[in-house]
Image (cartoon, rainbow, N blue to C red):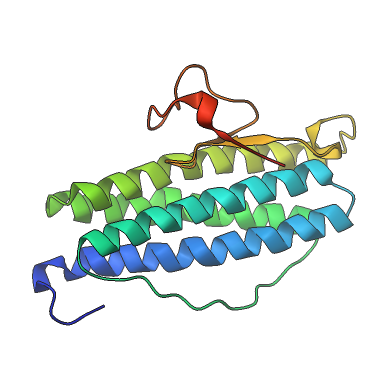
Length: 192
Protein backbone atom coordinates (compact mmCIF):
# COMPACT_ATOMS: atom_id res chain seq x y z
CA UNK A 1 0.00 0.00 0.00
CA UNK A 2 1.50 3.36 -0.96
CA UNK A 3 2.11 5.61 2.04
CA UNK A 4 0.93 8.77 0.20
CA UNK A 5 -2.70 7.71 0.52
CA UNK A 6 -5.13 9.37 2.91
CA UNK A 7 -4.69 7.71 6.33
CA UNK A 8 -8.47 7.59 6.73
CA UNK A 9 -8.55 5.11 3.84
CA UNK A 10 -6.08 2.72 5.44
CA UNK A 11 -8.59 0.43 7.23
CA UNK A 12 -10.60 -0.08 4.04
CA UNK A 13 -7.43 -0.57 2.00
CA UNK A 14 -6.13 -3.16 4.48
CA UNK A 15 -9.45 -5.01 4.32
CA UNK A 16 -9.51 -4.93 0.52
CA UNK A 17 -5.97 -6.23 0.35
CA UNK A 18 -6.68 -8.98 2.91
CA UNK A 19 -9.78 -10.02 0.98
CA UNK A 20 -7.89 -9.93 -2.32
CA UNK A 21 -5.09 -12.14 -1.00
CA UNK A 22 -7.55 -14.55 0.62
CA UNK A 23 -9.69 -14.87 -2.50
CA UNK A 24 -6.64 -15.55 -4.71
CA UNK A 25 -5.32 -18.21 -2.35
CA UNK A 26 -8.77 -19.76 -2.08
CA UNK A 27 -9.08 -19.88 -5.86
CA UNK A 28 -5.76 -21.72 -6.12
CA UNK A 29 -6.75 -24.06 -3.29
CA UNK A 30 -10.07 -24.91 -4.95
CA UNK A 31 -8.31 -25.77 -8.20
CA UNK A 32 -6.09 -28.20 -6.28
CA UNK A 33 -9.22 -29.60 -4.58
CA UNK A 34 -10.82 -30.05 -8.03
CA UNK A 35 -7.86 -32.14 -9.18
CA UNK A 36 -8.15 -34.30 -6.07
CA UNK A 37 -11.92 -34.74 -6.54
CA UNK A 38 -11.27 -35.90 -10.12
CA UNK A 39 -8.62 -38.33 -8.83
CA UNK A 40 -11.07 -39.58 -6.18
CA UNK A 41 -13.75 -40.26 -8.83
CA UNK A 42 -16.08 -37.35 -7.99
CA UNK A 43 -16.23 -35.33 -11.23
CA UNK A 44 -19.31 -33.35 -10.15
CA UNK A 45 -17.52 -32.14 -7.04
CA UNK A 46 -14.48 -31.32 -9.18
CA UNK A 47 -16.79 -29.21 -11.37
CA UNK A 48 -18.09 -27.43 -8.27
CA UNK A 49 -14.56 -26.67 -7.05
CA UNK A 50 -13.58 -25.31 -10.48
CA UNK A 51 -16.67 -23.07 -10.56
CA UNK A 52 -15.99 -21.85 -7.03
CA UNK A 53 -12.33 -21.20 -7.94
CA UNK A 54 -13.51 -19.05 -10.83
CA UNK A 55 -15.92 -17.24 -8.52
CA UNK A 56 -13.14 -16.52 -6.01
CA UNK A 57 -11.04 -15.08 -8.85
CA UNK A 58 -13.97 -12.79 -9.73
CA UNK A 59 -14.01 -11.59 -6.10
CA UNK A 60 -10.26 -10.96 -6.18
CA UNK A 61 -10.61 -8.99 -9.42
CA UNK A 62 -13.39 -6.89 -7.92
CA UNK A 63 -11.30 -6.12 -4.86
CA UNK A 64 -8.28 -5.27 -7.01
CA UNK A 65 -10.44 -2.81 -8.98
CA UNK A 66 -11.62 -1.18 -5.75
CA UNK A 67 -8.01 -0.89 -4.60
CA UNK A 68 -6.99 0.76 -7.89
CA UNK A 69 -9.91 3.20 -7.64
CA UNK A 70 -8.59 4.21 -4.22
CA UNK A 71 -5.09 4.74 -5.63
CA UNK A 72 -3.56 1.51 -4.34
CA UNK A 73 -2.58 -1.72 -6.01
CA UNK A 74 -3.00 -5.38 -5.18
CA UNK A 75 -0.12 -7.78 -4.73
CA UNK A 76 -0.30 -11.28 -3.35
CA UNK A 77 2.03 -14.19 -3.16
CA UNK A 78 0.95 -17.74 -3.67
CA UNK A 79 1.75 -20.56 -1.35
CA UNK A 80 1.13 -24.27 -1.61
CA UNK A 81 -1.99 -25.55 0.05
CA UNK A 82 -2.76 -28.74 1.88
CA UNK A 83 -4.91 -31.14 -0.13
CA UNK A 84 -6.64 -34.04 1.56
CA UNK A 85 -9.39 -36.40 0.45
CA UNK A 86 -12.45 -34.96 -1.28
CA UNK A 87 -14.71 -35.10 1.78
CA UNK A 88 -12.09 -33.39 3.97
CA UNK A 89 -11.51 -30.77 1.25
CA UNK A 90 -15.26 -30.06 1.07
CA UNK A 91 -15.43 -29.65 4.83
CA UNK A 92 -12.39 -27.37 4.79
CA UNK A 93 -13.92 -25.28 1.99
CA UNK A 94 -17.24 -25.06 3.85
CA UNK A 95 -15.47 -23.98 7.03
CA UNK A 96 -13.63 -21.24 5.15
CA UNK A 97 -16.79 -20.00 3.47
CA UNK A 98 -18.66 -19.96 6.79
CA UNK A 99 -15.84 -17.96 8.41
CA UNK A 100 -16.06 -15.37 5.63
CA UNK A 101 -19.88 -15.30 5.89
CA UNK A 102 -20.06 -14.99 9.66
CA UNK A 103 -17.02 -12.88 10.50
CA UNK A 104 -14.87 -11.47 7.74
CA UNK A 105 -17.20 -9.91 5.19
CA UNK A 106 -19.76 -8.48 7.64
CA UNK A 107 -16.95 -6.61 9.44
CA UNK A 108 -15.43 -5.45 6.14
CA UNK A 109 -18.82 -4.23 4.88
CA UNK A 110 -19.49 -2.34 8.11
CA UNK A 111 -16.07 -0.65 8.01
CA UNK A 112 -16.34 0.35 4.31
CA UNK A 113 -19.92 1.61 4.78
CA UNK A 114 -18.88 3.67 7.80
CA UNK A 115 -16.40 5.47 5.53
CA UNK A 116 -18.99 5.80 2.77
CA UNK A 117 -16.87 3.76 0.39
CA UNK A 118 -19.60 2.29 -1.78
CA UNK A 119 -17.20 0.55 -4.20
CA UNK A 120 -15.49 -1.43 -1.44
CA UNK A 121 -18.76 -2.07 0.41
CA UNK A 122 -20.43 -3.38 -2.78
CA UNK A 123 -17.44 -5.62 -3.56
CA UNK A 124 -17.57 -7.06 -0.05
CA UNK A 125 -21.38 -7.42 -0.10
CA UNK A 126 -21.39 -9.25 -3.40
CA UNK A 127 -18.60 -11.54 -2.19
CA UNK A 128 -20.54 -12.24 1.01
CA UNK A 129 -23.69 -13.23 -0.87
CA UNK A 130 -21.77 -15.35 -3.38
CA UNK A 131 -19.93 -17.12 -0.55
CA UNK A 132 -23.36 -18.12 0.77
CA UNK A 133 -24.08 -19.84 -2.56
CA UNK A 134 -20.79 -21.74 -2.25
CA UNK A 135 -21.58 -22.77 1.32
CA UNK A 136 -24.98 -24.14 0.25
CA UNK A 137 -23.42 -26.12 -2.60
CA UNK A 138 -20.63 -27.50 -0.39
CA UNK A 139 -23.17 -28.50 2.26
CA UNK A 140 -25.19 -30.36 -0.38
CA UNK A 141 -22.08 -32.07 -1.78
CA UNK A 142 -20.99 -33.18 1.71
CA UNK A 143 -24.44 -34.61 2.39
CA UNK A 144 -24.46 -36.50 -0.91
CA UNK A 145 -20.92 -37.80 -0.50
CA UNK A 146 -21.49 -38.92 3.11
CA UNK A 147 -24.73 -40.68 2.16
CA UNK A 148 -22.93 -42.35 -0.76
CA UNK A 149 -25.58 -41.16 -3.21
CA UNK A 150 -23.76 -42.25 -6.36
CA UNK A 151 -26.60 -41.39 -8.74
CA UNK A 152 -26.53 -37.68 -7.87
CA UNK A 153 -24.82 -34.71 -9.49
CA UNK A 154 -21.55 -35.44 -7.69
CA UNK A 155 -20.97 -38.49 -9.90
CA UNK A 156 -20.77 -36.72 -13.26
CA UNK A 157 -19.02 -33.70 -14.71
CA UNK A 158 -21.55 -30.91 -14.88
CA UNK A 159 -21.80 -27.21 -15.45
CA UNK A 160 -22.20 -24.70 -12.66
CA UNK A 161 -23.21 -21.17 -13.52
CA UNK A 162 -21.16 -18.26 -12.22
CA UNK A 163 -22.22 -14.64 -12.54
CA UNK A 164 -19.24 -12.76 -14.03
CA UNK A 165 -20.02 -9.67 -11.91
CA UNK A 166 -20.69 -10.90 -8.35
CA UNK A 167 -19.73 -14.60 -8.66
CA UNK A 168 -23.09 -16.02 -7.54
CA UNK A 169 -22.75 -19.75 -8.23
CA UNK A 170 -25.59 -22.20 -8.90
CA UNK A 171 -26.61 -25.50 -10.47
CA UNK A 172 -28.57 -23.69 -13.16
CA UNK A 173 -28.75 -20.17 -14.54
CA UNK A 174 -30.88 -17.72 -12.59
CA UNK A 175 -34.20 -16.55 -14.04
CA UNK A 176 -33.95 -13.26 -15.89
CA UNK A 177 -31.23 -11.72 -13.74
CA UNK A 178 -28.66 -12.72 -11.13
CA UNK A 179 -30.30 -12.95 -7.73
CA UNK A 180 -27.45 -10.96 -6.14
CA UNK A 181 -26.42 -8.21 -8.55
CA UNK A 182 -29.20 -8.29 -11.19
CA UNK A 183 -26.76 -8.90 -14.05
CA UNK A 184 -28.50 -10.62 -17.01
CA UNK A 185 -28.45 -14.34 -16.23
CA UNK A 186 -28.01 -15.29 -19.88
CA UNK A 187 -24.46 -13.95 -19.51
CA UNK A 188 -23.57 -16.31 -16.65
CA UNK A 189 -20.46 -18.37 -17.24
CA UNK A 190 -20.93 -22.13 -17.48
CA UNK A 191 -17.98 -23.75 -15.69
CA UNK A 192 -17.43 -27.52 -15.52
